[in-house]
Image (cartoon, rainbow, N blue to C red):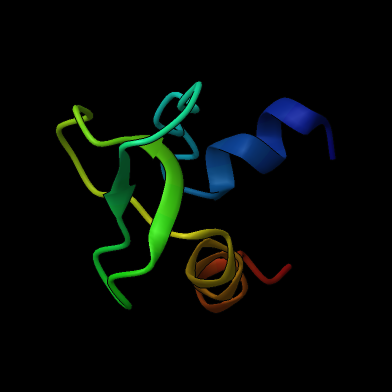
Length: 62
C-alpha cells in the first residue's frame, strides 16, 4: 500500500498551530496547562502531553 493510500484511509486532520517564540502561551483546551502555541492563535490548542494522548486515542489502526 502506498503512502497516498494510507493517508487517504486516515481522515484525521494533522495540521498544527504555529509554535510561539515566547510567552504568552495559549492554554491547553483539556488540562489548562500552557502549550507551545501563541496565545493569539484562534483554534484548538493542546499541551504536548494532551497532544500525545489525543494522537494515541485517535490513531488509525491498520
